[in-house]
Length: 160
Image (tube, rainbow, N blue to C red; front, top):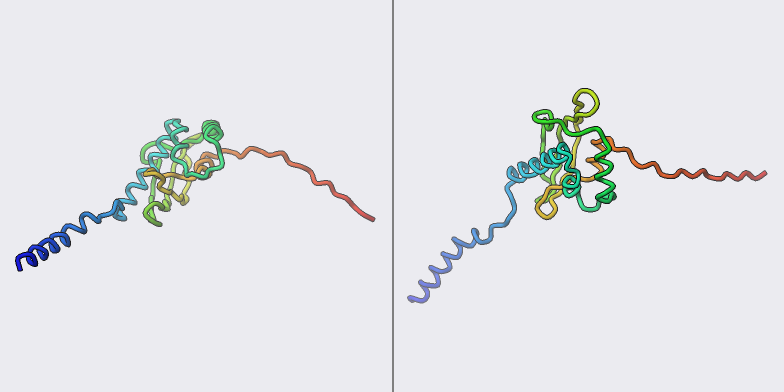
């Protein structure tokens, strides 16, 4: 009987402690939203400071640009995120999963003339613990022009 009571006590203790051990590393939705927003702001801050290689490190895997091409294109633009309250406004974060969110926001940019605002959505993914943005989104916001490829004329043959 004593062994049965000991087993019962151990079982109850394990049931009480088990959920704590089984806790996952996943964040609550509000924490995930705050973390993603902070990651997005960090990308904008690095860009504003001219730390283009660090911005590249926060781009999603699978970008088509090499690090050197990306840095050169971003450095060649005159546009950069605005400072302070103009940088990021009207932010709405939608959680798509534990490592994916969509952020819709109004962003301020400085360049030639007055601050220009752009409102649009961005998909961020969390890779190795870091929130990343697509290279194309950053280059699009910067107004970086694509390299012009060689255009070939098609030979037209007419038959009579």
